[in-house]
Image 1 (cartoon, helix red, strand yellow):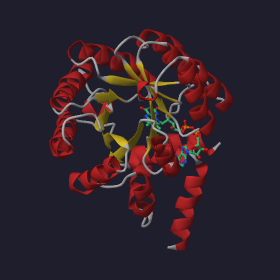
Image 2 (cartoon, rainbow, N blue to C red; image 1 turned 60 degrees about the vertical axis):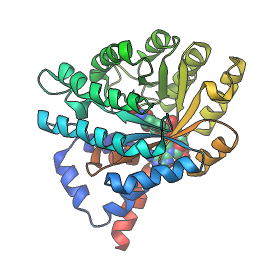
Image 3 (cartoon, rainbow, N blue to C red; image 1 turned 120 degrees about the vertical axis):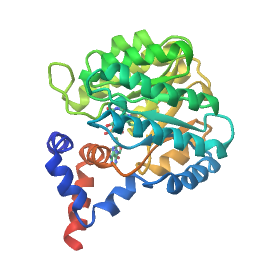
Length: 307
Ligand code: FDA
C-alpha cells in the first residue's frame, strides 16, 4: 500500500527538499549509503574486499537536468575508478551506472549518455573491471539495451539489469542469455503501470523464477540480485540443475540489507557482490529503499519523533 506512494514521492522536488532537510534523515540514510565522498567510501570498499566480498559501486544521482551535470557524473565515476586502483587489477569492485545520470533524458540524450558512459567503461576495463547498466523505469529501457549492445561491441563484459516485474523481461532474458553476457536479474524498484508490469508480489516472484531459469539454463553469466531467501535458495537449486559451478554465477545484494546473508553466502564459497551506493545526491536511491520495506519508513518517522 505505502510503496507506490513513496515511489511517487521519490520523483517530487517538494518531498526531496522536505526529506533532505529533516534533522534525522542522515542517520537513516547512512544505513544504506555508507559515505558521501570518495575518501569515505574507498576504505569501506577495501575492508569489504578483505572480508571476502565483491562490490558494485553506484555514485548516487539521477534525473539530472543539464549536460554539465551529466559530465560531472561521468567524472565522479572516473575519479572513483582511478582511486580503486589500490585494489589492483580485477573485478572485485565493478561499477553500476544509471544512464539517466549520464544525460539519457535530455535532448539528444541517447547519444549523450552513450558518449558519457563510454569513457567510464574504458577506464573500468583498464583496471580489469566491468560496468553494469542499471535498469530504470520502463520508458528508458530500449535506449539502455541499445547502449548496452553498442558498448558490448568493444567491451563484451559490460553487464545490464532486467526486472522481473515487466512483461517484456522473459523475451529480454532469452535474447541476453548468450555466451559472454552478464545479466543481473532484480524484481524492479520503480512505479510501473499495469499495462507493462505485474502489480502483485506473487506474480513478480513467479516471473523472477521463470526468468532466472532462462538465465541459468543459458550461456551467459547470471547475477542474482535479490534479498529474498526463497529466491536465493531457488537460484542455488536452478544453478545446480543447470550444471553451473559456484563461480559460474553470483549473488548480489544491497549495502545495508541482510548483511549477515552477504557473509554467509560468501563463506559458502559463492561470489557475493554488494551494491554500494555513495555520494550526496542520495534522495531517489534512499526513497526506493524505503518503498521496498515500509518498516524502514516507520523507523525513519520514529527517529524523527524521538529526536
Ligand atoms: P523483497 O522486496 O521481497 O525483499 C525480500 C526481503 O529482503 C525482505 O523481506 C526484507 O527482509 C529484505 N529487504 C528487501 N528490501 C529491503 C529494504 N529496502 N530494506 C530492508 N530490507 C529489505 N531495481 C531496479 O529497478 N533496477 C536496478 O538496476 C536495480 N539494481 C539492483 C541491484 C541489486 C544488487 C539489488 C539487490 C537490487 C537492485 N534493484 C534494482 C532493486 C530491486 O528491484 C528490488 O527493489 C529490491 O532488491 C527488493 O527486492 P528483493 O528481491 O530483495 O525482494
